[in-house]
Image (tube, rainbow, N blue to C red):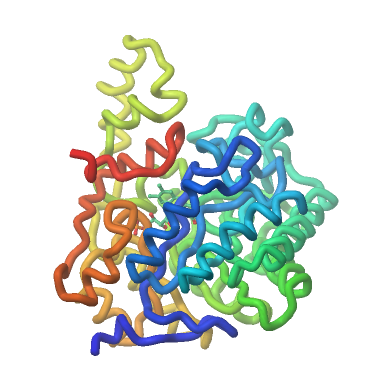
Length: 399
Ligand SMILES: Cc1cc2nc3c(=O)[nH]c(=O)nc-3n(C[C@H](O)[C@H](O)[C@H](O)COP(=O)(O)O)c2cc1C
């Protein structure tokens, strides 16, 4: 039997196979961030399609960390627990497993959405959102840590099988880890131990809130496409530090930030879709659109690293050598053969996928039945840019 279809554990949770649905913002919550029936139906497709574990799209831990993307799921109030519980109970009745990803968007959002000033380690705007955040005070840092813990407890009370702390992709926790966005000179910035402090304290606070047997996962970056952004060597150190807290049950490895474009979701540069779906581009006057398309977008395209299958696997394999926790690798993983190789050779314990499962939620079953060897996703990235203004969908599936 293929190693892909063998079970493995993350803390106290046993996962029936090695294929995980990576967190992907769904935009299917209602306007208050409550999970909806549509969201349940969407997840149901993964369970029926044979995936081992669903990691939800990111859920906001507090209003100041709310995403600017279309209809983020929220977990910032006890009033939401019953709504989450309904969704989770439904997934469990089908035999599925589901982990809630919890996040604070930091400077990668807009204050007109959060209703509060943006929060970041340093007063530096993100190159995409272009809004100046406030340098967080110590008190604000502790409030965020506390809200991660409260959100994790709500997830547990809702019945989720675990939580994943989002410390990747340029959101708040990852901006602390990166020298590019963290210019602080106090105990929350500077050396690696200081930059890791908020993440370590969050892991400890979350574990204390949910108890030692409740699975706590974390997602971090292997690489950022900026001169002083996170490098693989730093990622390896951060993974060791996360493992060293004793409060983490698995580490998922991704890469990139919103402002470095499609490093995280490598593939095509979806120029037309950007101007059709993504704010502020879709709102510009046609003449401005023309100028941007002609002069700015070609320059951005050149900066994108090319797509190669499993672009985080090399660093994941290095992480796996130095920690004893399960490692999950995400990013451009598309073929059954590659997945089997990665697990067989001990480079990762699990693989996770986002874009391919939007197109084929039943990919795991197809691989198992031998009716497919490679995902159909062609990395057009339309799903990525459209998530700004539309609920999640595959734009290729329709045609
Ligand atoms: C539409 C979309 C939404 C995403 N939302 C999230 C998210 O909420 N949290 C997260 O950690 N990653 C998010 N990602 C990134 C994925 O989890 C994953 O790291 C990335 O897409 C690379 O994997 P892939 O090549 O399998 O798509 C999103 C990706 C897509 C395509």
